[in-house]
Length: 117
Image 1 (cartoon, rainbow, N blue to C red):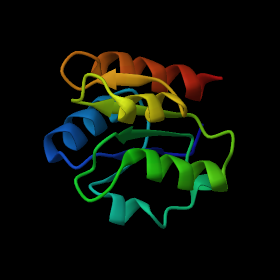
Image 2 (image 1 turned 90 degrees about the horizontal axis):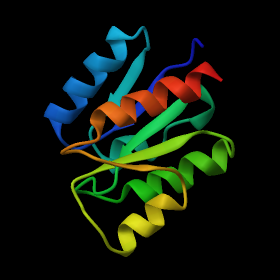
Image 3 (image 1 turned 180 degrees about the vertical axis):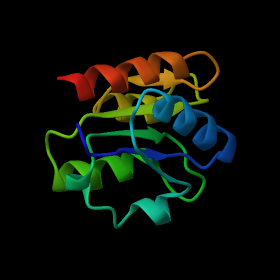
Image 4 (image 1 turned 120 degrees about the horizontal axis):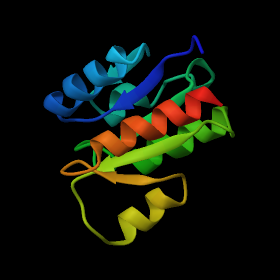
C-alpha cells in the first residue's frame, strides 16, 4: 500500500521511535505532534492512523472523529500512558488501545496487519 500511516503523538520520543520502527518495515509515516496539527488532515490520504489519547492540546478521540468523518473505514488505533477511565472507553469505540509502556510492538503489529489487508 502506498498511502502513509498517520501518527499523532505529543511525545517527540514516541513519534521518532514509532516512525523509525514503521519505516524499517517499509511504511511511510506522517508524524504530527498535536491536535492542532492534525485537525485539518485529509483522512483519505492515509492507510491507517495511530493516535495518542491525550495530545496535550486536545484529545486523540477528537482527531479520530475528524478522521472517521472524512474516511469512515479508516483503521484507527491509540497509544496511551493512561491505564483506565472513560477516556479510554471513548478511544476503544474507534479501535484498539495500546500501552505506550508495553504495547508499542503490538501497535506496530496492528498497523502491519491492517495495511496488509
